[in-house]
Length: 153
Image (cartoon, rainbow, N blue to C red; front, side, top):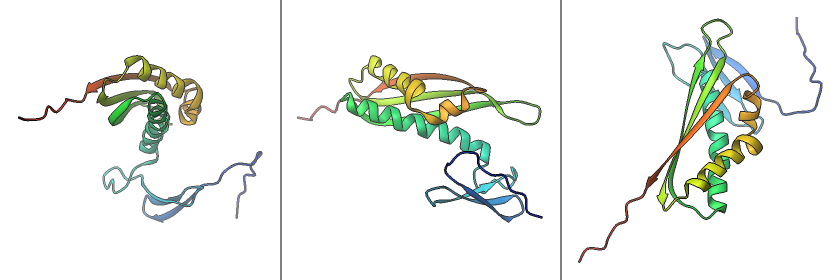
């Protein structure tokens, strides 16, 4: 028997195929293949809930990096760390996520970083907007000054 759930609005389509015991292959709307593993002992690929953390980090990182470049900030390294807290009961959804931005560069403006993060949170990051109704998202950042290499005499 085939069950069908018609989409009420046009949208994008992802496909997930069972490969073997708790191992799946996801195909993104753009055609990229992504293995998924729900066996936490085997852990041969990311789990779907791990990908939520990665999706939030990648979404905000894309926004912030682009905004900082437009603000002519000299960023030499940029890392986003995302941690999450899940419910103990099923469904074990995330209740909170913490997004920590680590920006390294020369004379980076804290005001520029804060503004870039704010724009990502309030205007651009679709993943945060999707999660936010039920997930509390906290953000923080740190700036690491790139050491100046003095020429040797």
